Length: 188
Image 1 (spheres, rainbow, N blue to C red):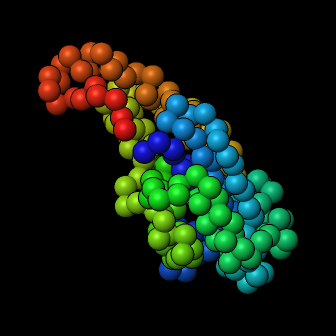
Image 2: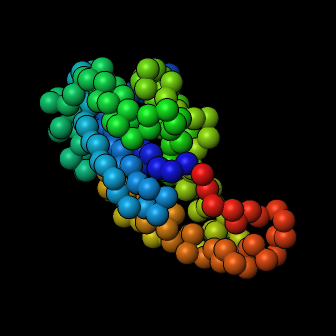
Image 3: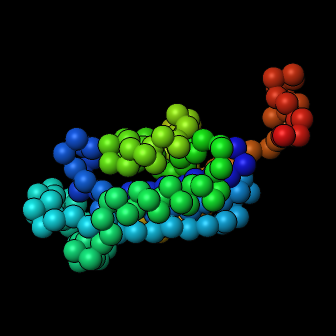
């Protein structure tokens, strides 16, 4: 993996069978977290979809200002076309490894609503929430985040969070203690 495809979706709920995508953002970075490209779209949904949101979503998306933007959002077909163009620029033949917090949830919605784009995805993901759970459970450490519930802001928070967790990794110590388990050969 030479590039990281950070993704965050805001949805009407957590069940991809009945809920819908409201917003999608992508930040593509290299493995040193340098931003290479950014994408953001609010997704159009009809009023009935917005009215059917649960109270938590109505409150969060109302406070963030997202709900007011949905009537002028882009159709999901246009969003998928733009994501395919974005991925072609950065991941010619390479499968996309999704990165983010609880990114498996985003992955399920992508599979359900962006089927052509989902064909570009790898089955692997980089889930920052896994690091969060380990650091919280083992060392009672928690990285503070803004939790604004806007897709692009949330991605930048996820990137900072992973950087914080990785700052604890001592690669020299890791290589010494792991013997031949760890390879320090340069990547192709």
